[in-house]
Image 1 (cartoon, rainbow, N blue to C red):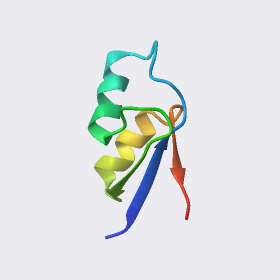
Image 2 (image 1 turned 180 degrees about the vertical axis):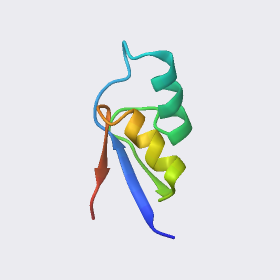
Image 3 (image 1 turned 45 degrees about the vertical axis):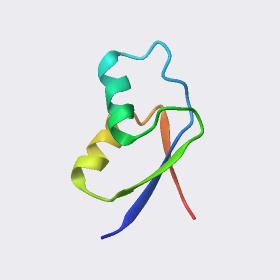
Image 4 (image 1 turned 90 degrees about the horizontal axis):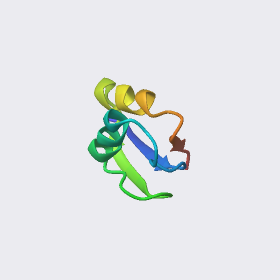
Length: 59
């Protein structure tokens, strides 16, 4: 299965609670952190929900 790297690029301050919980579920708790996940539809959906706060890192 493919691996996807996600980086938080904007702050979670003043975001709705559901978006903060989505960032927590992705494992992103601090700014500029990078986490790796399997590329599944569930992970893609979470990334899509907070797409204004994160970016996908290319190697």
